[in-house]
Image (cartoon, rainbow, N blue to C red; front, side, top):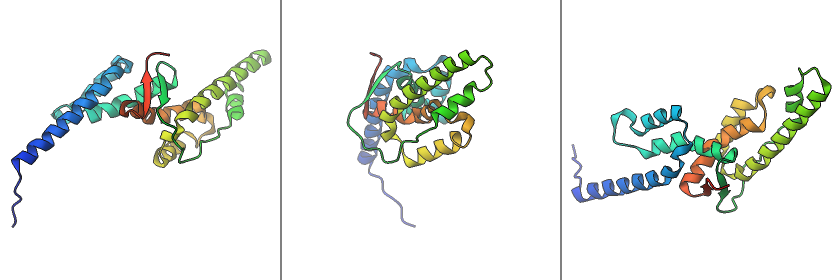
Length: 185
């Protein structure tokens, strides 16, 4: 049996590098902490101290990224990609008209139905234009997951649900610097 000799200086250097990465991530997450609702903050803190280990800001980043992305989508944060990225996959063209028609189908008053339909279409177009900007952040695996979760049922095939799938990639882009995200709108 061959024993492995560990250089204590290398072990210390690895620890220092890991510590510096964790501290840098902690500082990048700090400005976004206010976006996490109080009831979810406990879950994020649990992720931070997963299995009673030392704080792991990678786990906290995963927890917070969806809240950061959600704030970008609903305009609580101003978010812009720092460079023009090329989309690797085609943006899904959802049938907005069919979704909005289904949404108002049970309404009885035709004038109200028309107003709500027009409002639905306007909201869907607005969110779609915002999501197109961030679509290059999506991986094929994440897009497939979204399609399986939300697009199999036409009753929930809308751009708000697509946005829910995109929250984490957008949030991660804010934290890693691929996107610039600030509370100044």
